[in-house]
Image 1 (cartoon, rainbow, N blue to C red):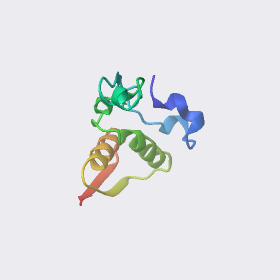
Image 2 (image 1 turned 120 degrees about the vertical axis):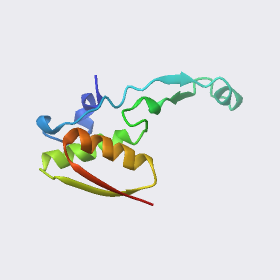
Image 3 (image 1 turned 180 degrees about the horizontal axis):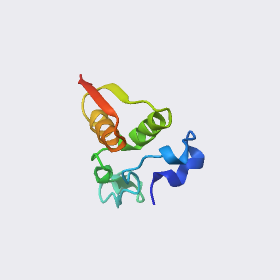
Image 4 (image 1 turned 90 degrees about the vertical axis):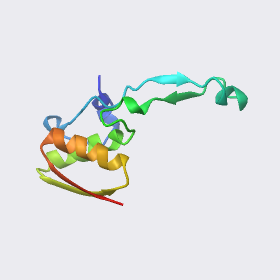
Length: 104
């Protein structure tokens, strides 16, 4: 399964342009200390490092780059101080889109 199983909740993208690198479905782990200490015994943390670029930003990049593919766009230009740039670069590479990131 991938994040496109939620397509009915997302901005529409034609099926042929729906890019995925396996984002989503990252593991959950129960908090052993923080949750119980604040009265939340069922507090869980999501391990987003399991995404393709190692970041939760993959959850936005899959959609942004899929929309670029759908529109036939060939270049992505963005600013980033880290995770956004990594996610955009990964998805652009998968889509064959030139990617330029200005580090800030």
